[in-house]
Length: 136
Image (tube, rainbow, N blue to C red; front, side, top):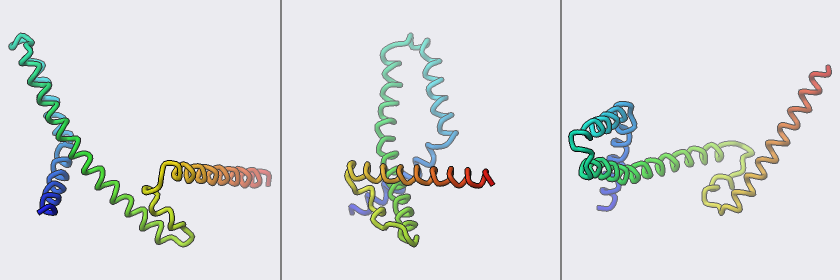
């Protein structure tokens, strides 16, 4: 039962995010806001008139948070798995890098500093080679 609910949510979230992520959906939302704004004078800019847009946007925002988080979690997981597969398949790659997302912030900071040193060393080597080639 739980898997069916998860699958239904996943499928629904993907479809809704695909539809609501289009220019047409944005244009419809913009039209709704424009219509609401233009009708303000008809309702004398009353509290009820303001409450309509506030309630509508609050409900939509609340629901969209769950949809966006679901799709981002799935996309992140898929990207992570693809990167793990690339690391695993490369000779000389450090397989311990495959689970970086599970490390503490301190350990991630150490890796970041290590890669910054490697990048700097690579730039220094490239500069040295460029200068050597330019002198010839």
